Image (cartoon, rainbow, N blue to C red; front, side, top):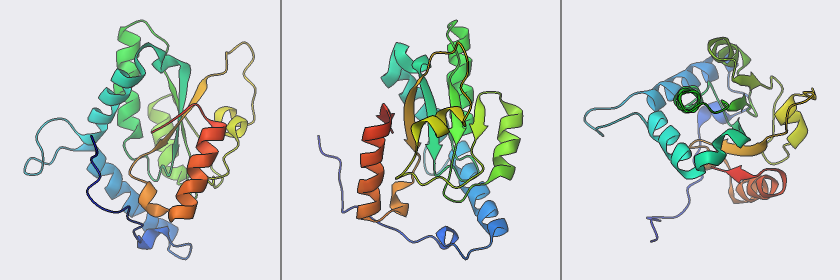
Length: 187
């Protein structure tokens, strides 16, 4: 079934501009993160978008879920990822399975917000330097430059949470090509 209801949109956000103050960018990112975590009673009933995303990932990846490291490109102030992590890892631990790791990245990193997230869960790492999603080196993102002895290398799942409107068509194609060549899954 085809669910496309219109053309792909490339939208402008003022906080995407290089000249936009980092402090204000962080505040906008925090507002967007908040929107992922709540249910708006008059717009939709049921769980938050983050909770729904966690449920879909668990269902679709099934028993292979623990074999992935999730890398959130365009992570902003965290978006849905901390809530997704909490839901997924709580479920995995209940089932006696290995928790999954998450890596936060962005072209405009927000290490202050990411450090707070990391303090809440050992499942998080982040890259404080800018990461271009269209040229993302696998090892650097996965291991942060450190090889973990005795630990099996996990598959890479690249996450883009409502992020593709930031890219023009050529940028989106470049990101998808890089994801196909350098990761195991994208969502």
